[in-house]
Image: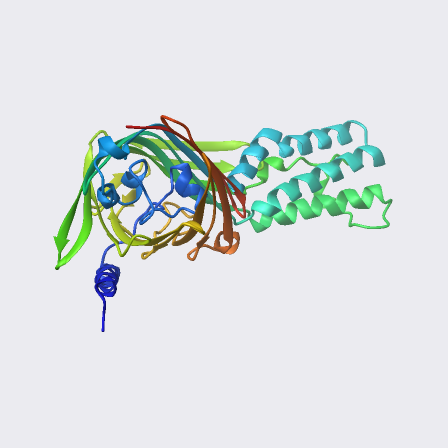
Length: 432
C-alpha cells in the first residue's frame, strides 16, 4: 500500500516526466550555478537551495521554512554574488595570445636568415615545435565562459517567501578549429630545420620552404587555425514569490519568478597563429519578459524533492551577422537529504539537453554534492558530469568550497580546477 510520502514522490515524478516529453525547445544556455554553495556542491540546488540562492535554482524553496522570519532569521541580503567559469581551452587561448609563440617563431626565422647556421636553425626548430605544442592540445576542443555578478534579497517566511534579484551574466561558447594545412606546415618546418641541425642525419630538406637565395620563408601569415565563439551578455531583473499550497490533494511549495531580461549578442573569431581577430556585438534595447516556475516537496524531515522550469517563455536575440541566439525553457529536477551524522546531500539532473550557443558542447548535467558543518565552518564538495559533452567535457568534474557563518551572515567560496573547467565563486550575505 502506498504511503502519503510515496504518493507525493509519484506525483512529482509524473510531473517531471510529463514535462520531459512535452515538446519544449531546448535552451541555448547552460543551466548554470552562480553562487559558491551550489557550485561547490557540484551545481546542485533545485531541492537544496535556501533564501540566498533559491531565486537562481527553484523559487518554491523560499516557502520551505516553518518559522517566521523574525524568529529564525531565514532571510538573506546577498552582495556580491559573483562567479566565473571558463574552460581550460579558453585559458590556453588567453595564454597563447599573451605569449605570442607565432611571433617568437617569426623572429627566429629572421635571426636564421640574418646568420644561417646550425645554432640559429636550432632556434627556429625549437620555436616551431613550441608553436605546434601550443596548438595541438586545443585543436578541435570546445571553449566556454560563464560569469555572473549580482545582488539578491531573499525573504524566507513561514510557508511563504519572496526574493529580488538583479544580475549581469555573460555566457558563451565556441570551438578551436586547427586546419590540416597548419598542422602539415608546422611539421614541414620541423623536418626542414631538423635536417639542417642534424646535418642531414634526420628530417627532410623541404626546399619549398626556402627562396632562391636560400632564405627560409616566413609563412606564419598563412596559418589559418581559428577560435570562434558566440556569447550573450544578459541583465536580469526578477522578483520571486512562493507559497505552501494544496496541489492535487498534496501540500507542496510552489514558486514563480517573473523576470525581465535585456541582452546583447557577441561573435568572435581569432586566427590563433597570427594574432588576427575580429568581433561583432549587437545590443537589443528591449526588455524581454519570461518566467521561472518551481515546485518542491518535503517528504519528511530529511528528504526533499523539487523540479523547476526556467525561462518558460522563450526569448530570442539577434546577432550582428544576421543569426539568432535563443533562450528557451530549461527543465531540471533535484533531491536533497539531510542527516545529522552524514551531513547534507543534494542531487540534480538536467532533464533536457541544452544546446550550445555557438559550436561548443551541449550541456546536460548530473550534479551531486554534499555539505558538512564543522562548528562555524561548512565544508562542501561534489562532482558533476556533462552527459552531452564530448571528449574531456564528458568526464566527471570535481568541485569544492567552504563557508563560514558569523554572527550577522555568511561568507562562501568555491573553486573548481578539475577536468576541462576552471571556476571560482564568492558570496557575502547577511541574515535578517
